[in-house]
Length: 235
Image (cartoon, rainbow, N blue to C red):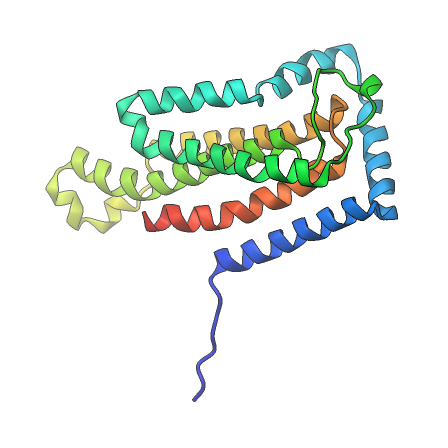
């Protein structure tokens, strides 16, 4: 009887999103009609939403994705001994991975940004892919994966057993009850997921990126998060 070979889920996700990134990148380089139509329609919709109140919110948000902000956060997590190993190193690694991906791609593709007259913030360099979008997705996406993994393993087993005593190790019903940290973990994961999504959209709103810059960065980021999630599970 022949055995059916199955591919791991993370590898399937990696291949799918990487293929989508490759398709978008090829379309951007070739300036295919769908890219021009997609960019113009989404850009016009984003600009139609512009108002003083929304701009006052979006501008600081998009600035929070600058390398200075990410560097400060990673540095703080590395300095604090309790967060260095479990958060500082993984998030710093994801930030460096992002830079190592989007910087060479920008100078290889050399896509020009939208007209400077449309910019609400100062931004130079090439456009594709969006560095802010990719970095936010990798850094905060990695943090979401870490929070879920640590909560599922360390919190439920080690902390619960420690609080209730050695007998709790043999009381499976206790270990499977909802813990006080469940709600907080969900709230944090939702918050970071919303933040990294809005970060990409904000780059379109402030006029420094084409929509396909953001779309391509999302696909590349999701492709890279697939092996990262597998690495977190193994380590």
